[in-house]
Length: 272
Image (cartoon, rainbow, N blue to C red; front, side):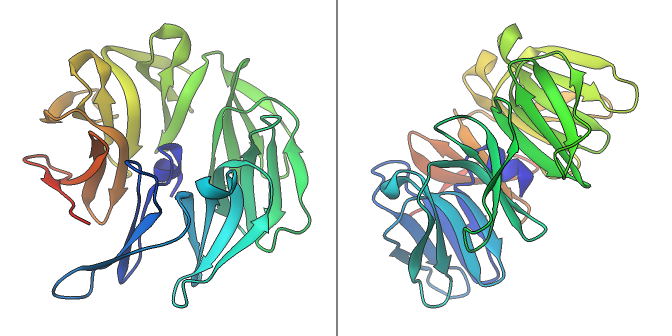
């Protein structure tokens, strides 16, 4: 969930349905029935970003409603406004929805009904993730960490990151102050490793490998092993919005969605 949210949360896969946000004409979100022999696609009213599945509901930022926090019941497809504020990079964790308010760039949280909203981190937050009871967030002062109560804040790395992912004991990020070069920060040793042959414009992980679009090679897709530091190009197409779902890599090329095996090969366009 964390990794997809970093790329916009534009894809979400459930047991029976695949949701693909329309990033070409922004007409809505494609809802594809994957359990039918012939896939049947329908279009929701809202353009869903930062999709989170909670029970039988989807929570998302609706681009048609000024990025407001909304909810859709999956079976009935009823869409409902939950919080009329511009919510960015929203993430569900332990009965709470965390999000960045686009007006003041602070991190907030609220209940799933929109109640009990409160400012959680009163600092400029560019992006964040939640892992193992800890919040990691990128700020103009560097990458910082605190517990889920918002207390015990500390700067763990001075780099200014445009996106952050956690893979095991490492944080992967694109270093904004260094041409978005891919960097791995070891949470145990406090040491950073910079990979100057990769400028990451979009990143994701399956928990073992890091996948990224490399600006130095036409935004083609690379797979990197964070343990050894080795990397290979697995797809030559220009890619953005990398998402991982059900052992496949999804990405946008010319505003159309494509899917690719995590091992690489030829990508196929998703027709909706």
